Image 1 (cartoon, rainbow, N blue to C red):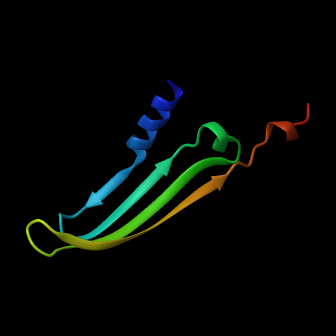
Image 2: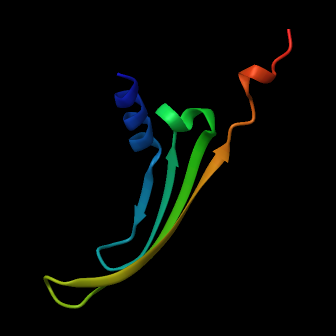
Image 3: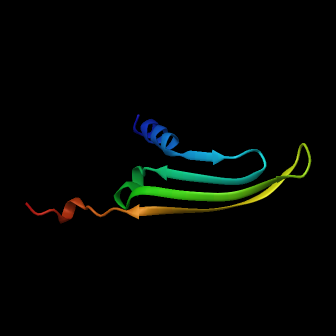
Length: 82
């Protein structure tokens, strides 16, 4: 259930701005960590930029460059003083 919720939230926060089949593409991504990464990373943000060119009806050629940044967890439960 937890994985389904995490996957649903990741799909919800992923936005794709696609102009057409050919041309420039900009994609903004967001993600929530789970399992082993949950203690080190609190949020993940990403950006992809690409260009696609139609060579003919069945073949497209292009390139994409992307960056994903994991925002570190700043709250650790063992540091809290009572």
